[in-house]
Amino acid sequence: MHIPDNNKPALLHIVRDLRGDVVGQLDSPSAPSGLYPDIILQVASHLNDDNAQSSFQFFDLWELILTHWFPQREGYEVKHLWFIPYLQDREGADKITFVVLKDDQSPVVLLQVSAPRDFHNVHTRAAAEALTASQFEHVAPYCDYDHSLCAIAAMGKKWSAFQRSPRLTAEEARSLGEEHIEWMDDIVSEPSFEMLECFFASLKAGVRAYRLGQ
Image 1 (cartoon, rainbow, N blue to C red):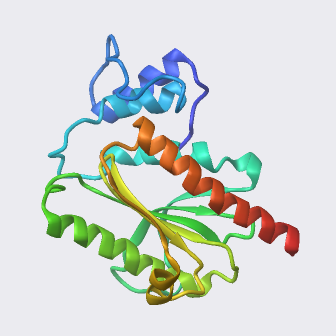
Image 2: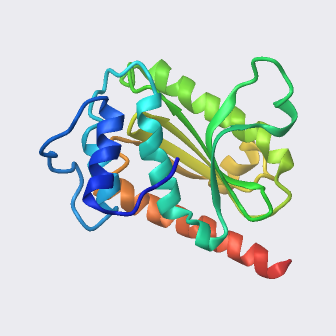
Image 3: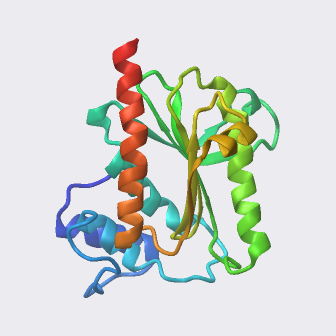
């Protein structure tokens, strides 16, 4: 996805594309101004259907958010629909919705976006988290580094996340106190912004230390 400059015509164009109709006067965004850029807040403000049966309409929002935290100028690349390496030749193999790659093309963030419908069903939430955990376990053997790998499960704008060294098993991580964020209601809310800010700051600090040590 091409992310346009932060100007009003481009903003109107993106929101129109996401909603499938022409937007006139935009509603106020659902998060306080000054956290995310206006383009993210405006796109998010038009994604309020908690019964949406498709995850596709949320893809642009999540790509914008990942690009905000992991810009190209810092040596990161956000990839859409990424195959887990050794599964890529299998027919019907699932792709991870988004990954953030370092300059050596190894992943540091995995993000699986699902539809928000049935979020309040505990089994649906558990299934989303289980899928993300499974993706982490499949990708971890290909991450030859000591810093953390982050995995995010999203259902619409709701999300949860964890990060740990890919060298640790889930059991080892639990015994050491794995960094984990329980389900949050809105990715562009102030609490979500602050949680991700801290979460990604520690992750990127580990990446910087790894780069310096190479």
